[in-house]
Length: 324
Length: 299
Image (cartoon, rainbow over all chains, first blue to last red; front, side, top):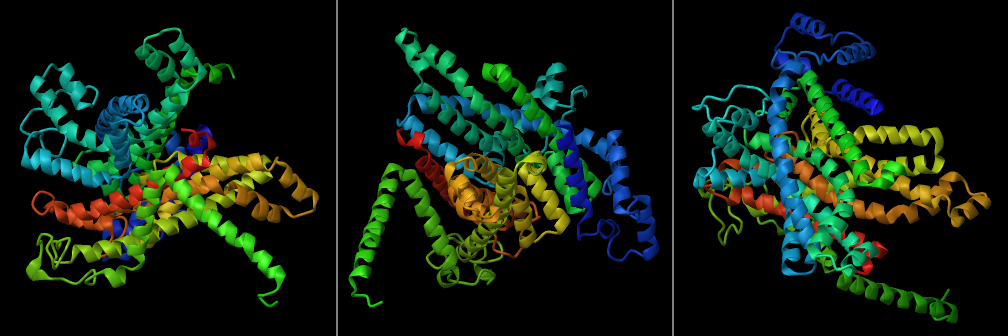
């Protein structure tokens, strides 16, 4: 994993430095004087040779220093610390949506194979995996916020309310801890539409995988044996089939976290959600490379850690991995 | 040789039979996997529309009918007009052309590079294999849209750079797939035989390994076409891909986003076009995978 992270930092550095676009001109504008440009390059270390810049960059990285954002003029690590909780909250909620909808849909689809539920669920999964997430966000906002006004609009929280005291940074959790019902309702209301938008793609992928893994398992001898023993069908499905079908599904659940992070960029843009995705987009537009590199690096780290956790859970679920 | 000689006549006979056989195979495959057939149908229609866009489109994609701006679908403008009075049908057709090109370029670029890396790594093995696979691991550590966005931002927003960025994001999948195939194939007798005959490595790879490793790569290519179209649209939506007034579907949704509640067709029709095209490629990929997987055939 260390090797992968080193590779990740090399690649992000490479992208930011072997580029035709000039971040200095973007920051200072086209009419900047030469001496201003020179001073700027010096201030951000852009005047030194690229290999030296890279070594400095790695040294700083090891100390958790991601440099200073050209756009916000604050340390990138501080910026990320500020925007991370919003993305974690949104991503976590979307993941929950995907698991709670995707796994049951996949199981029922396999159990009732070729019946009407199976057809509808497969069609839904297919559409969910092919739908542009940014349009879905627009439609949900258009219907449930502008037209019906069932949900609050973009953003994380209404400014007219006073936010709960920051403990975890996750508004829903903080509001619950503070026992502030109004804040909790407001935070949940703001979270619902973006979580649904972001979670749909993963729901589709997880439902498809659960279905095919369940189908694979339902035809195995041990399932037939369990049925022959006279076990209730529900016990057969949950205890014997599902447990084994979850093994391949786990891998997809881990990988789907990556698509959640990708989708967060689009979802956060539409819902004005103040998270890493929106920060990344805004930074990339202004060629703020320390910030872009920081986000890319942190997101890759997050993704790698999640997949490592998934591997560990995998080993718990599957004795063959543990003792193999 | 004159066509009437017995030799050529007997030559042609099995050929004809083979052709008829292939036709029958396609019908049988379509019956076995109607979803794949549906996917293939969508993809074929989409490709035809894209190729024939200049003939089929009633107007140029940038021609403005300002007096009709935001008009709903009508007989004169079957899919309505956008906020600048441009015919949405014409823009959708030209957009199909663009997304087809994006998909093809990404698949060819990513597929060729990835397959070359994967087959070489698997065939040569040892340290080279190790290094190449660690490099693909690094690429897998990034969520695709985020890496593509970073690359697209660095290269500068344009359609060409979008394609390059997406290809850079997608090649590792082909590398892994083709390496796995090669590891199995290189131990089989026919490769040993080719080696015993003194063929060079390059020749063995091109003539014997590659053709036998192709099926999962073709399935992947189909999924990849859909994925590329989605990522490209997403990048355009946030401003890193094609730029207005290009009739790219993601740009069209982005430009029409303010009209979602009042003139729904402006952002919705390009979104449905994306949905349909991507669904077609996903269906086709699913179907091809099922057809090529002997275990799925029984079900």
